[in-house]
Length: 290
Image (cartoon, rainbow, N blue to C red):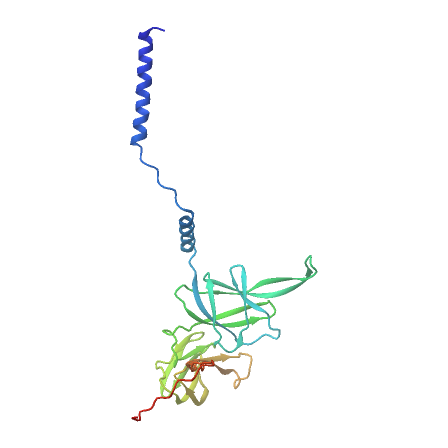
């Protein structure tokens, strides 16, 4: 090959190598690889932010207990948290963490058996409790339907702001308008509604108590006249109940649920144990001059 033909090829290769070298020197340096621990921490934070959980205090109780008490549990994720409601009591507190639509399930033992020869256990839906994210403390009454194997619910706000201790709340389960008078202060609740006594008791008080029903035809019927004791450490739910099939005298009756404040005594610190050993005891000191 002649020199004239070889020179352009050599010069072209030189320029090409020079361009590659400049490109490598001007390219931005690669970012350092992220450490595995940092990646795991970042991903964990992302998962926590993606699935926030709320906590509610739930107080579940039977309005009237079924003849055959079912085994109940709160469905919390894939787990069941068993609980046993009391009758006409909302003092038992269960902390629930999870989704706002709380599902109560009941245990059913099937006649079928598994591979190990044990009966197959199923947890079937019993009732659903729709709660809000702003709710914190709820009283929940269960009204069982034994024929269908489910229950209806009635929710009450038990937060300190909505229902402080020393409060009285009227719950009207009748078709009439109910009026209650406590020491001359009257408050009323419409049919299927609720109403709060406007005062909060700050000490134990014995009060005159009257309850009356105003029916749709204008007739008024006195349901209860008695003396009731209210305390600053109790929350009182007073129910007016109607039995349409009963006689006129037995048509209305009342029920009360009291949630008492449980005050735990302060722990008493025990004195430190005496020093054990074979050494001599320290001499006693006195104020007498020697």
